[in-house]
Amino acid sequence: MEQDKKSQTTAEQMTDRDLSEQIKKVTMEIHTRAEKTELMMSFMRGQVTLAQYKLLLCSLYEVYQTLEEEMDRNSNHPGVAPIYFPTELARLDAIAKDLEYFYGRDWREKIVVPAATKRYCHRLRQIGKENPVFLVAHAYTRYLGDLSGGQVLGRIAQKSMGLKSSEGLSFFAFPGVSNPTLFKQLYRSRMNSVELTEEERNGMLEEGVRAFELNIQVFDDLQKMLLTVPEQKLQTCSTQSVNALQILIGKTAPLFRMVMGLFVALATVSIGLYAF
Image (cartoon, rainbow, N blue to C red; front, side, top):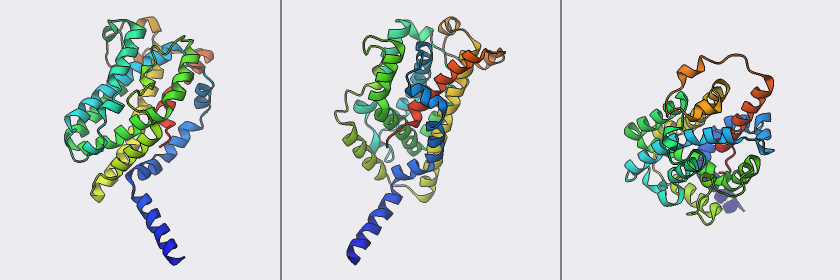
């Protein structure tokens, strides 16, 4: 009996030291706030529009382009190599395929992203150069979150937008992962094997929280864009910061505000409802 208690205590201590569990704990509060909002529940009821989804894809493309460039560049780094799974997880090509489906072959000339997306990308480039191991926090938050909710969110989006096929929904599909549950276990195991100093571990936990904060800032800015400029004008813009557009925000009808709120629900789902 005494031996069993010691084994249980040892297992609990090991779990407490697991990086994946620690990041999950430190992000729990922001996760819970997002999960319990009425806006989140609205999305889960299937009330997202095509315009909202298309604009979200634009920012996701920018973020994943930067994240995957930094992951590729640091793929041999001892902190990054264990969780480097480009074949299984890379999202950039899938998002580009979706953007082409919705915007046409010249989609690069039509998309627009907010200033917060640029700040997010700047942070990814910064740590890619200065502290590559912190990329683990961003990769874990984004990739495993998308993998966990991909199939469910894909079906919700398809039904909400009235799409007759899965075209335009490649972002949610992970053809390189045959068993998401087993893959996530492997990913967590690899992640937990990364050797970190106490200072690096603390910095990693802070970066996990920052990853959520940066995503939420992006979604807040996207909401302002939708409030400010008609969809037709957004589709003719080139990729750029939209700080200048935000000064145009004026009075908005209550119904329109509600619709924009649903976009925040979609955005929060994509980073908040992870099942690590």
